[in-house]
Image (spheres, rainbow, N blue to C red):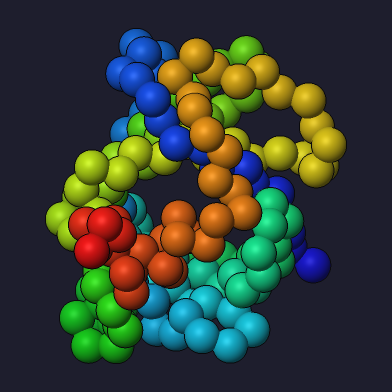
Length: 157
């Protein structure tokens, strides 16, 4: 069984930009986001993936991801997604022996910047970078599937 252990934090400054080693632009939409799992189509520059992730709250979830043809992904995004297509730029940043991914959201989610770290086990020790703030791993509003249905710009409304 595939599993993901991921912790998510709000970003509080721009210091992460000094450590960027890779950048990706993502467009992703959800074919379903209700029930026991979400099913996502993601286009990352020139590659595409189908992702199935358990709809459980917390830092550990079951996840499967498969490459699919780019043309199929484009058609799925155009025809089958529910909610908004989520767009973001992901910056890969190394810090203290770990890979961090900083997502800068666009469109209806502009203004939201979140850092994620994937771990090998739930109690794995890691150092928090100085540009990381509040942990939001257990707040479902920050899940991308939720951002597709209730974008960041609507939170204060």
